[in-house]
Image (cartoon, rainbow, N blue to C red; front, side, top):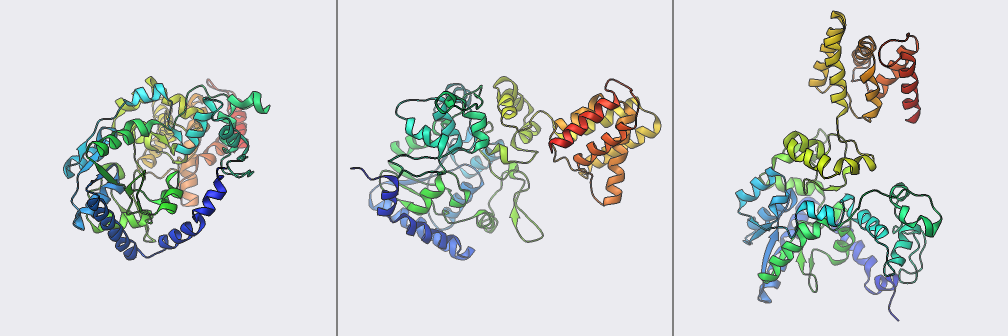
Length: 454
């Protein structure tokens, strides 16, 4: 009888391997770099013994750093990438470093149309794809996704992480409503985790096959996701059906950024360089992670401006193509991610309209709010729809709100939050009469409802 998952983990001594790996993750930076050097050379020498070749698969900052690290320790090897999928600033660095460009098996549009949109995370997208494509073969897995119960093969466990979070079950669990008597939504678009396979992974696999070569990869377990457990169990170097080296497996974000500084790695513009906070923590001021320009993995976790906002700034034509012509706007709206306008733009539109329509004193207030916007002194971290209600209010109402922002900033020594703006606007409107396209009472009721939702 075949072993179940729990039995296989015990036979493979999985818990011990993970514990050892976590100890290595706690090593100081210098020890981690030495460890990476040893693992990189071990892999190189082993593959040479087999009469095979090595190469590195390059993408964003992590793997660019790995490429220069390998070169710095004397391992000179070919570098390959499906560069056309990356941001233009990353493509420029690839060209500078002599990275060979590969072609994807399918275009981005073909992948979206054939398989679906890459949203949330690879793991969650894979689960949603199974729910959307039910079969007898995946019935047990779908049951685990809906309930957390793994069945015999999974050790008959309950409450496992196989269950999709309730938030996303509410949005994507609809195909199983009849089976489980639920009332979940049925998503109007397809979701898939297969984009990376056709766009990146398979082209690199074909290169490896044709050149009898095995890859170095810039993977880190600290990134979590699907690869975390695999890296913990298999370590930096893996040989067998899958053969690869991940010298940075035990690194965290601080380690990789420090190494990039130590090696004078050219940082693509999309990251905004590498900066240091007051507490000494390193970070990239712009993008934290990068990928294909139409990738939605992790987008729901980003604060605005998020990756699609930055794409609009750098390439508005491509942004419009994905948002409107390829349906990404509908997808982001469905998962609750704003995309069409930033809250700051709404406030700016209001201020500009006030300048045109209101008396001189009101125009001065509008001028002031625009100055604050330009100096990034107003907190925009609020949902866009909570500010849209001001669009139809009269100039006088808008002026009162703008003046309140300035008053809050002066008295509190900080920017007023949009929540405070709405709250103050609501109080003002409760004392006002009916004017303009949107009555003050209506606006007060709207603002009160929005506040109640918070």
